[in-house]
Image (tube, rainbow, N blue to C red; front, side, top):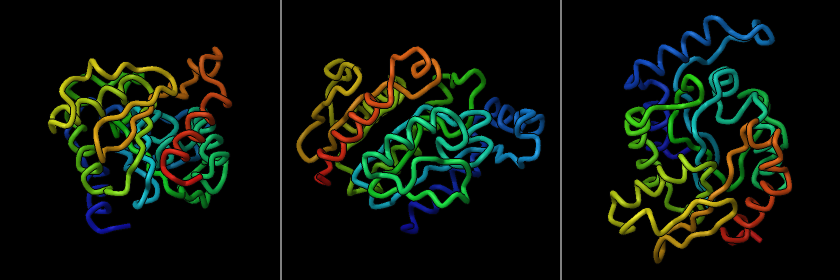
Length: 230
């Protein structure tokens, strides 16, 4: 991994900017869920993960309390990750369709996974202030990852967070011109990445049928074409 990107991930893992989130991550790690009582939880901010030369950037919401907060890798160890990695594997971005731990051999090819918040929030709901505290990390990633051609935002919060960065940089005039919708494609300006919105693969969406495997695969198959990967 390029040195500056590696240093940034180390900064993320060591971050203590949000006391409420740090306390929650540590509390969950100490108490643990019965099914994972033999695990040593990660219990701190979860760094981004993937191919540093990625053409595809995926932005999620935040680590799951007993998923990434347990395993230390984005979308690893919970049902949201099950859906995401099945789709990424089918679309050719992941070396395998399952993601259980940091040591399971999974590699991303041409994709990078980040988040609007790198700590697991109570109730999966980071506050606006906590999102602002974390936004600088995503902004720095965007500056370092010069090969990105497509951004897939998983859920409206991630979608809005990315647009807020573009607006702050003067790359778009208004977020209002970019309505969120599943598999809706947006041009964000000449030489800037294509933005694609997607429903988040949360249990609320997948168990109700709002988001299916086929729908998520369609997003990433389209993203692959936009990336020029066939």
